[in-house]
Length: 268
Ligand SMILES: [Zn+2]
Image (cartoon, rainbow, N blue to C red; front, side, top):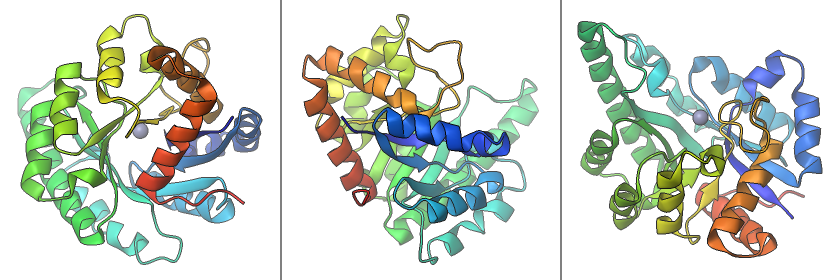
């Protein structure tokens, strides 16, 4: 059975010197492909190098994550477009979006950061529109502003995935109605997240993708350990249970959805 981890962060394992072990545990668990997602200048080049060294297994994205947006955001965003002219180009722009959960406590500072996030998001959506590439969205406590910003940008909603979906079934309807989709993390394995499970069921399988978002959000039954791509299999098994279908069939459909959305080739 083959699963794809559609959203992971590998720079931490590389820095700790444990990436080879993490990759071989992924292989052993049937995860032959994964997408290393960009968050800031600190990982774009790392992801590019990993994807270039292991093209069969790793694809990459670049984008400025809202939690890394500062008043200097333009300096980073200015460097995005050049990646799309490289022969081994990113498979998407992201993760980009809005995060009102991690704002500074000081309200004046929070207002400033919110406005930088908004501008960085708008400018990056225009870059994605120009590149006509898929877009990976990070959105926390900011659902309405996320939707209205994407609406106003004029990007093709069919190219949009809201990753680590943590909103409700009612909200996913608003996303799906526009042609956008959500991907789901280990949160769907948690007992305290029935709303996210309902959103998963509401969206259905046709556009579904799954992800670890490692090193965060370790799924059951591995909680307490550091998350890694191998565990996307546990997320897939839980999805199969929730949908009431055979894991083999679900795995094949999710791999196909993910390859089609990001334009990935099958590994050799
Ligand atoms: Zn992420």
